[in-house]
Image (cartoon, rainbow, N blue to C red; front, side, top):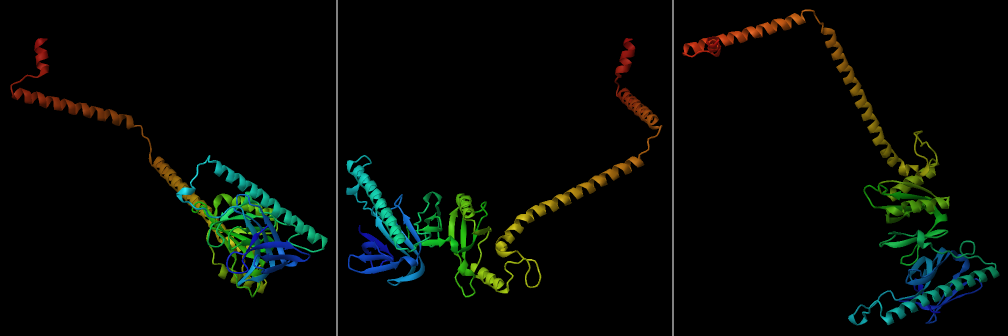
Length: 382
């Protein structure tokens, strides 16, 4: 079975045959070029079937990098294409959904997928048998690892969106180049950035490797960007299942070059895993400083609300005291007397008297004008 190799030994596509020997693999191209890979240099051995993929592959993640052509790499892959990655879309190639030729082509593709999956899986099992018979070791526990597509999620580890799939020991993207392989036993800590899901629909995932803690290391942690929010709980559960990897979360992106410089300085001073700094001042233990500011921000609003509530309650109590004092003062100043009833009778009498005076003036005015008042008319009729 002719398969291809990535990265290529030479410029252009490299096609040949892969064979397993006593202590390693040998890949011989159709032009006679040879590439050898020892079992002892293989840290992870992956087999990815062509389920919803265009290729079926065997992938090796190495302990020590190798120089292949002009590329220094820790990943070597051998694959076979199920269908071509591009298809001509000219008018002559248009066919209907129920075209017999189209149906036959889909059937041949399914048969080819099944055949390639069986061939690659059989080769992997034969490799493990050869390794066991010769008391050699390959990968983790002399087993090949298969990515779990059901637990996969989209992210941007380099420059484009890819499907990242967890395995038993790693988080990988083996389909697109450059390859992305994170060995979980090399991870020291994981930090989630931009986790304010009220503002953003995606978040970032940062891998701090154990090598990043070395004094002479200048590398920055690996970041996977633009992961959908609905995958956050799934990823946390997967990390919990690992059991030996810690994680924190924050709402803002960090300058990891400066962060790691500070971490290495505290490690050299021996205070990184302590709750006191060199001056005896309290500080977060270990990686808790990554989420300390966000925890304070989460606590501050509640504290403000509590203080506002206390102030408002105090003001309301003061206003209640003040109003009650006023009422009590007014009640103290108000002394009911027995002459209140007499005053009302006097006012009523004065009002009646004023009405009589007004009536008298109207009668006199009508008399001067030669008219008679209604009262006089009534008297004459009587």
